[in-house]
Image (cartoon, rainbow, N blue to C red; front, side, top):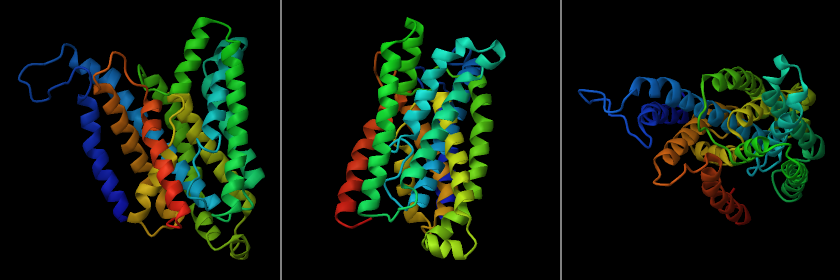
Length: 330
């Protein structure tokens, strides 16, 4: 079994019970009498669904980041940096505008549906603009970055417009919540929305693994081996759109996970794209779960938003990667 799978699976086993016990009020599992009133209710209805969502969101973003880096052959690829998460967030924001116009049966699922549509659109645009010139260096990286900046800028401008013209104070508060990213007050209902979408995204991304391996030899060599570029692109569009869209629908924008995780995992694998997918899912789950546990116990008046916390970690990490890239160490 892949060494990285063992490492991060073991870490996840340790983090899950810690996440259930950690919070503003710690739960002592060894106390003779319950140390917290309604401890069982807090565990089952508040902390457990939050932990499950953290695992789903982190695993989805980690897998999507590894798949994008493999497809684009670009170590700086990330769903957030290349506009996919901002477009998914724009879709979620749009649901606050148009969801009320839909029949009640459709309005209940409008947020995840709009978020998924935004993520899929962003991935398709990125692939059409830059997906065929991925060289992994030089002009390729510049083109990917410019394409991602264009998509993210468009999403940011439209989101700012939505904020400016928010139809109500409630809609405005919800928009801000999704943009900052958080797992606060999530329930099992959110899990039932995110879980099937994320699992379907995993299926598409793992199905693309063999094609990603072939693509490391170059597009022409991959074609000679029977690779269908359009089929591979479709799998990536579906997989990334589902995992990122489900994550945004459940928690808002959680940045940099897809960028950080593959770099943590890669030294423990044979560096082939397919061998990165499962370890990246586990490592992403560990990262988001650990970060969510940390923001719950920080001594602050209000809980630090998860998206802000991960951005504070991810931005310096991205700068470090740029320095390494400039020195030719990636």
